[in-house]
Length: 139
Ligand code: UDP
Ligand code: MG
Image (tube, rainbow, N blue to C red; front, side, top):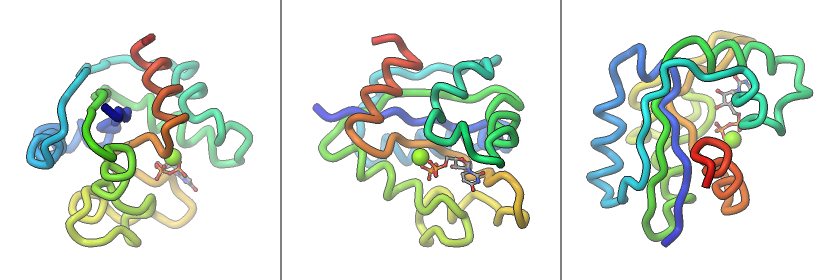
């Protein structure tokens, strides 16, 4: 069965949204394969996770955001789960996300030029999912 990696980012944990994110996963019928609360995530891990963003001028702020507090990381499985979870998350910018998506329903609009605090992460392809699951869970 197809698998993807998801993260409830530090803003989602701080705002008490872990339960509501997990509820949406369960309501959609996806299986939880792995689920971990990580109280201290290293900069090195975030750098590897976001390797395609490393050379961007704004990347240091993303690293600071992703290491700013505990996060919850997991693996879910189901038919077309990679694309479906991306749809459930909504667009990267909360102000562009469609109503009913996690980012539209819970995230605040990004401040101009600031880091986009958008509650959740999801792998964007089968190759990314395999890479990210191995990175976070070593399998
Ligand atoms: N991000 C940001 N500013 C940008 C681009 C990205 O703060 O200009 C952050 C944001 O939290 C985003 C993450 O970096 O979710 C990864 O960016 P990506 O383009 O992969 O978006 P996603 O796949 O999360 O929708
Ligand atoms: Mg991405």
